[in-house]
Length: 88
Image (tube, rainbow, N blue to C red; front, side, top):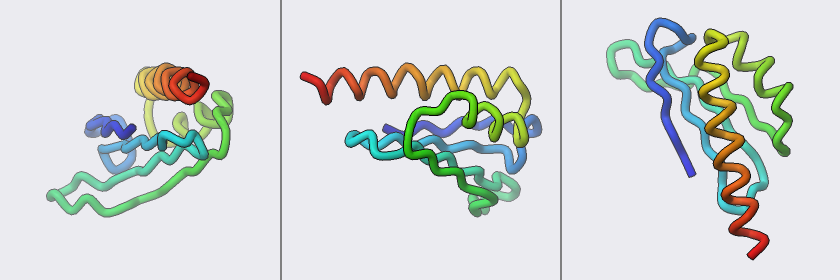
């Protein structure tokens, strides 16, 4: 499951791409440069469990608290959905 948040000037690079595999082995957050359509990777965070505090701490360094809350809420919701699918 992947979602790209196009934040613009409120985040480093302008785009944040979050990927959660169906196996729930990790959460990957890519910080992408949106200047002139390059799409180059600026930074990458990989988490091997859903640690909300650590994810929020890292996101606060690159974007505002508003977008940090939106991104962590999306991760939390989709992590629980995938977890429920794997339990069935």
